[in-house]
Image (cartoon, rainbow, N blue to C red; front, side, top):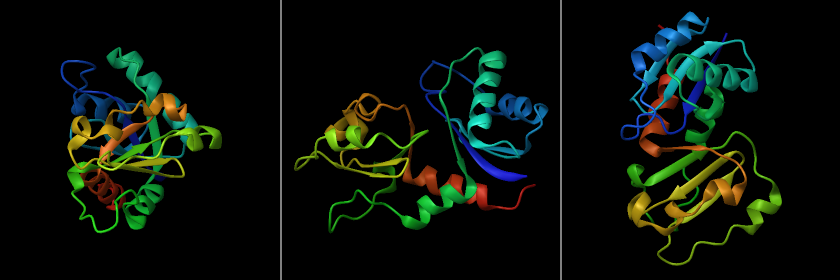
Length: 184
């Protein structure tokens, strides 16, 4: 079985789409997934499975709908893919900028956006933050936070034509480490 990272969009934000991690781990283990672990309560799951990415995402989506009553977007990466994101490091930092991991966001997309969509995204202006797309991963530099930096408020789902789920760099590195750790 391979290690996979399952990222859930928009759970446990305020009072919407509440899912406790203990019951989520139990439900996924009961479905046959191995070594199910979670990080934080924001929908970061590491598990072992033989399912391919699309089947895993569909099954977890159906499981959450059936067991918890929520329609939640699910994005999957292999442990190796997440490790590659960390190894490659941040790409949207302006020259000479020091990384603040709480203000650097990676949005994991289920598919590579269409090239025409990507070329239509405007360049960030001075003081707007920065963005870069690396494959299926949208990297955002948000020096004034998500709400205070203009690129943080752009309608990325509409711009890129696909819905993703974002994690700050601290969470990305911690989930990658969890996925790389021996199961058990």
